[in-house]
Image (cartoon, rainbow, N blue to C red):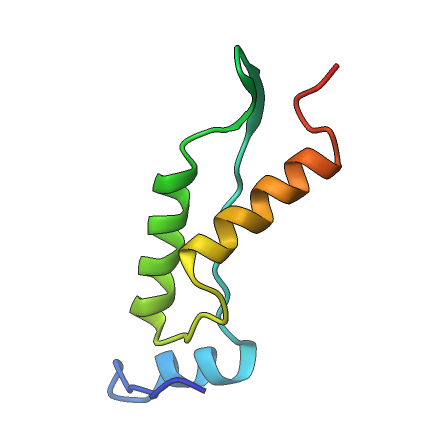
Length: 83
């Protein structure tokens, strides 16, 4: 678990984070491009995901490069963006 902090004098920020948990996520769109399926602004999504994880003190289990490859595989295997 990440280092904890007490933002409010009564500790409510910490209590919410500890009891309810924190989560980050990104939603990406895919579309059919002239050279195949494209994940819309993938680099920007992953930068934002990594920045959010860093902000919350979450250690990411996978590198950006590994996530890119996993997304490409998922898009290809599921034929996303293909009619």
